[in-house]
Length: 86
Image 1 (cartoon, rainbow, N blue to C red):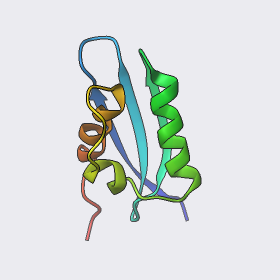
Image 2: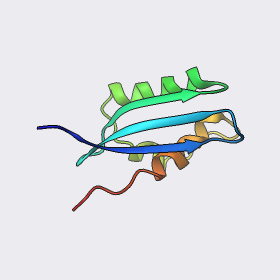
Image 3: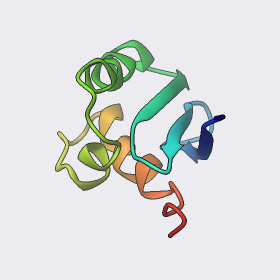
């Protein structure tokens, strides 16, 4: 059975950095993530660790992340994921 995906995009602080993520629906696994911009590698490493550990996207949505860092934009990105259909 094909997996339905929720797709979220978010522009982080300024015009350059961009992120895209794919989240499983129903469910809450992060299936994919891309980022272009400053410190992208460090942000991607955090998301990759969550993906390898099977953590839900809600971990980033609800987390208190270090300020000021590019990773703090993960809150807004994952808050943009539409709720799973009931």
